[in-house]
Amino acid sequence: MTGTPALELRSVRRVYGFGSAATTALDDVHLTVPSGRFVSLIGPSGCGKSTLLRLVAGLEQPDHGGVLVHGVSPAEACAAKMIGLVPQSPALLPWLSVLRNVTLPQKINRGAGKRRERIADFAERQAAVPDMKELLVKAGLGDALHKLPAQLSGGMRQRAAIVRAFGLQPDVLVMDEPFSALDEFTRESLQDQLLDLWEELRTTVLFVTHSVSEAVRLSDTVVVMAPNPGRIVESIDVDLPRPRGERLFGERRFHEYEDLVRERLRRAWHSEAA
Ligand SMILES: Nc1ncnc2c1ncn2[C@@H]1O[C@H](COP(=O)(O)OP(=O)(O)OP(=O)(O)O)[C@@H](O)[C@H]1O
Ligand SMILES: [Mg+2]
Image 1: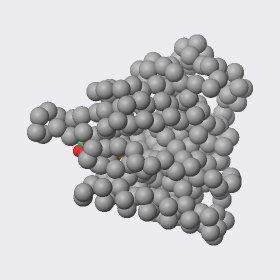
Image 2: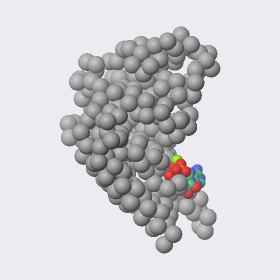
Image 3: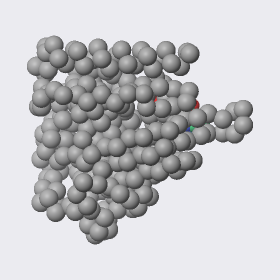
Image 4: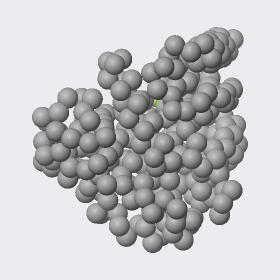
């Protein structure tokens, strides 16, 4: 199975509603994401970013075209727990401690492993089953292991949700604006932790954001989308070295990428008005 892309969208179209009230949320979308890449989607509100994530996560079906996750349908990939989802606001179980919240899905989903082995070759990553306590400590939650979600700040809850998603070792992790409700510094520190986890576990990530600098900092590829109909207008490979720590913000090439993405976004807005 080596060489099969983690994600493949071909001629994807998704239309909501009928007749004159129809909205084409996605039209003729082609996207191939090789395994292990970090890809961000950015674009004006309503250009279909969340719709694209829902199609990948198997929550909806395209009206035309196809979606494959490691060569199988999203429904099959979901059944084998190959897909992890971090929603905009973290859904932790309020009656369980942080530690139990992040370890529970691992326990529940043990049975899915077998199904997964049949779909792809996981030998390499199975050697590195993450220690959840260690991941929580790395994410700065060492003092919060035994606290309840209600005792945490929003940023801490979001970190716990990210650790939990990585802990399931999904092959593809889809994240819909996971940091949008956080202040800038918390956001940057969570980006650090996300990159650390990703570099260690090498999951394929599909990440939605409205922040240009966040997209450039995190991604191997930034996919720019435009609305009416929702579509991909540009795919920009970010050729900056990793790790991408704070020093990146002082580098000229980082800002050149930001300018490039911003310019393409401006065109995407313009294309809506046209
Ligand atoms: N369930 C639905 N029923 C009808 N229309 C929908 C539905 N979901 C999305 N849409 C429409 O599809 C288009 C794309 O929506 P989507 O939520 O994917 O956009 P988005 O890029 O995620 O926007 P935002 O940045 O605001 O989150 C929008 O015009 C939206 O109104
Ligand atoms: Mg959205």
